[in-house]
Length: 208
Image (cartoon, rainbow, N blue to C red):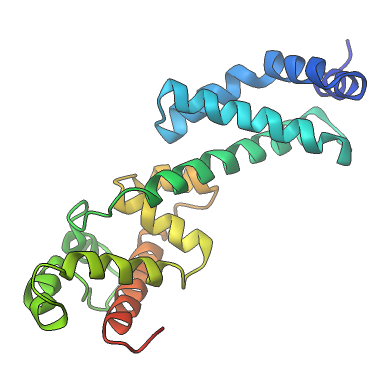
C-alpha cells in the first residue's frame, strides 16, 4: 500500500480540496490531540489551529519533496507546533502580565548557579512607583516599559519568559518550544533579570 504522505501529495496535485480532506483524515486527530495535550487549549482553539495548519500545508506543500513518511510528518508537526506557538503568543499579548503569578524570589533561591540579584519585583514597584510616576499611573506606564523591554530580547527567550509568567512548567515550555529542559530555569532567570534591568532603564529614560 502506498505510504500515507504519498497519497496526500498525490491528492493535492489533483485537487486542493481532496488533498485537505485526506490530510485531515490521516493526521487531523493527532494534530488536534497534540494541541489539547501539549498546549492546554480548549476544543474550539485546537480546531482553529488545526484548520490553520491544514491551510498552511495546502499553500506550500507543492514546494517540497519528502524522502520518507517520517520526513513528512516531522515537517507537518513543525508547522503545527509553530501555529500553536503563534496562537499562544497572540493570546498572551492581549493579557496583562501579573507580576505575582510566580514567586520570583523562590525561583531565584532554587537556581543554585544563578547569583545575580532579582531587582524588578513587586517590592520595587511599591518602593519606587511614586518616585517615577504620577500617583495612580505607575502600573500602566510600568507595563508599557516592560512591553518595550520584551522586544529587545530574542524570540525564544521572550517565549520562555512569557510562558513561565503564565504558569507553564519548565517541562511544558521545553516541549512547546522544542528545546532541552536542562538549564532552562537558569536561562529563564537570566533573561528575566535582563528584562528587569532594561525595563528600569526605559523607565529612567536611558533607552528609547
